Length: 389
Image (cartoon, rainbow, N blue to C red; front, side, top):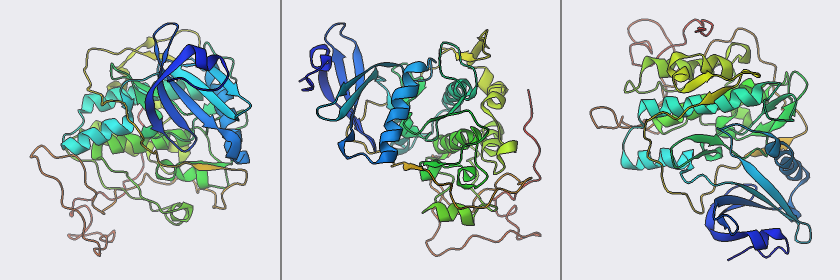
């Protein structure tokens, strides 16, 4: 089967199967009839796109071909079918599928993701973000910092070797000014500062990474919001359930340093790359632009088969109007854990924590023998700036 576009796409590529479907289009697994190479072809039918969706498509077409990093999906070419109002983006095919499927596979099997695998993924994602967030990029004509703005497991692909690659840049922005002010992203991974009238920086991507690391540990999200108004309401009192003791204090501390309400105090990608548990997965600092390249090591990670017909959580389409939220106040402490129970990975003893009863209310923050600390839920500590290594 081939594409019926009347373009070189028909002659050069053969469709094997549909590999996935998201908010912006359909992705096909295909084979180059010239080289036999497997590729992914993203089909965007823009005939019914709104102005914001067309803008998102143009962002991806503009930015992605000019980025070059081992942990960013390599885009090969773009083919436009003007008659049918479709665009086809040809990129490398990642046989391991989405990180979300990798997480789901372990959750279904009731097995924990090995901590070293989580550190490896964290290092590779942070390396790509460090490259994007740098104003000067090696082997790229893109100037200014690039914010992904929709980082989530569905937008992170795994190779056959088990390495991470960021994809889907339709929400990204190349930022010349100090702050962005438009609302964009997927609610579950959205940093509270994105909802602030003061604007936000590339640190919003780091909040999303904190949510992803938490999800790899717990198979649930640290926060569940029904809408932007929930984020506004909880702006100063966001809590999440602590990560299982099955994982180390190091990984819990890294998540706590990423899920910090004040973006000025939140870990940057560079901070994260300096952490000893992260830097062990990085080769020597690359010359020229201070970008670190990932080496794959010998740690084996089993990836799931490529997905089919999986709908990713829909992103919030970008709004040209800043969200009507108050500016973040300075010196906000890191968010404490949420006493609400979530089902996480099996503990070392092989059992799951009991879910919270539907009508059970969280215990109030208090002092004394009935405090949250004594109930196994950590109260907000006094904030200490992230340690530099």
